[in-house]
Image 1 (cartoon, rainbow, N blue to C red):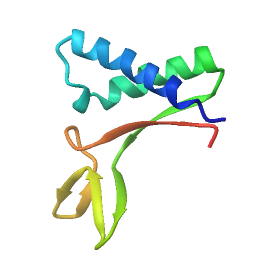
Image 2 (cartoon, helix red, strand yellow; image 1 turned 90 degrees about the horizontal axis):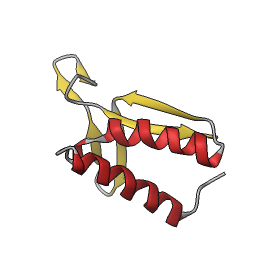
Image 3 (cartoon, rainbow, N blue to C red; image 1 turned 120 degrees about the vertical axis):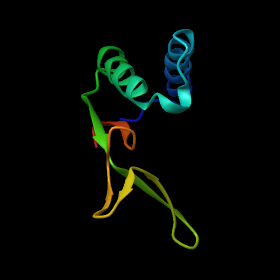
Length: 92
């Protein structure tokens, strides 16, 4: 089950307001969005969300344009304390 776009926007705005009120940056608060968002999805939408953290890479199309949340090291790309992304997975 997907939530409606207006519900998603309302959840985002709520979490962004809390992050900003604590002098945080919504652009760098994926952990806050994932944890609070998962709680809201479980409590109010009765979904079974799971927070995931680690290396995340997205193919943007074109000439192999890739957006990567990670860190480039000698052994390759990996996640690190400063190079990672958090997201929520729920019902596939």
